[in-house]
Structure formats: C-alpha cells, structure tokens
Image (cartoon, rainbow, N blue to C red; front, side, top):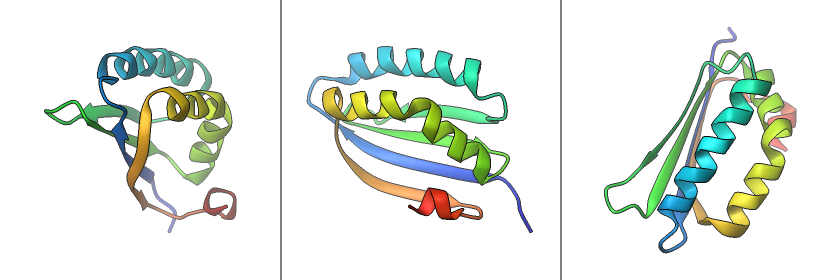
Length: 102
C-alpha cells in the first residue's frame, strides 16, 4: 500500500554558518514553493547550539521526492560546498523507488 514518503536528513553545519544556512534555506523554500506543487511539508530545524540542522520533508509519494531532487540539485551541491560539514543521518519512511535508492 503506497502512502506518504517522509525524508529526514540531519546535517552538521560548518562552524559559524547557521545565519548563512538560514538565508539559503529561505531561498530554497521559495524554489520549492514555486516548482514543487505536490510537496506537503518542507521544514528545517536547528539544534540549540546552532551546529546541526534537520530537514524534514513530507511528500505524497516517492515520485514527488524524485522531482524534488531534480529541482534542488544545484542548491544541495552549493549547500555542501558552503554550509554543511557532513550528513550525520538519513531516515526514509515510505516506499523507496529505484531512482531514489540510486
């Protein structure tokens, strides 16, 4: 039974980059709102120390997540170059398509 697709990625920020991350996040949200009409929820949460962020995405299905990866590929690449130290965890709930698994 297909249901919603939930993706939670947790990332360590580069030192002192929380403010830059928050500004980049606002830009990314604008892109998502304009180009991903099926996205149900797209949120980011920082820890109290401002050293780690969790991105929580709720999609109606895996194909919505596949579209998201295409739409924001450039933004993700730039974030890793400028803002993110590393991904510390990834959680996926729902049916994972072959394209997403790759």
